[in-house]
Length: 259
Image (tube, rainbow, N blue to C red):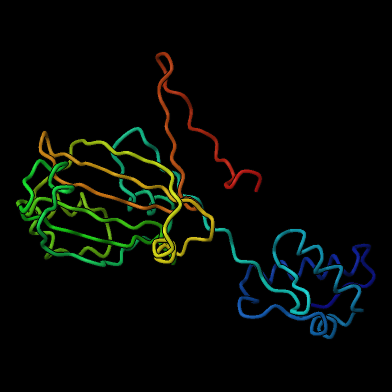
């Protein structure tokens, strides 16, 4: 770009505008130019370059670090909003947000039910269950850690299914001819243990949602699940009717508050 030195628009503003366009095009993903490089490229003073970069910094496009120059800021990942008025699927929520969804299968095997697992499933300790453990991803980042226990009859066929994407209930319907019709879940905030934080790549001092869920097919318990969901990437929304008409959708709110 050649600067228009006869324009009433200051040189720093012309440079800032050009740099914004190049940032949008992804030109500086690996390296943002130093002040010296920008000075040579635009043939202006270092003060003019610094003024242009200062405005990019104010806009949150680049960050300056003393002794290290400027670098491009990472885009803030979107917050997934989960309505609570009906049975929901994390996979569907991720896909509906326009984000790639996948799962890393950590375990898929037969196990013997302990008393803690057998009780919610209406089974006896020692009965066979199918255990599925998955790390769920939204784009490149993990968002949830799921551990599910299901009666081996009828869930045994899940062990031959591709569990690397999609919701477990869709897989149950496709491979086991079982459709989830109801259930309940309990949600509480927790501070994850160090190993859990590392698994979810969760920033320090950031809470997560601990979710216990019992899924039913008719009156029969089919799945007992424990999930740990990142609190910085996930929000829960409840809505209810008031009078004859349901209320409008809640507004989108920046998260964390004040951002």
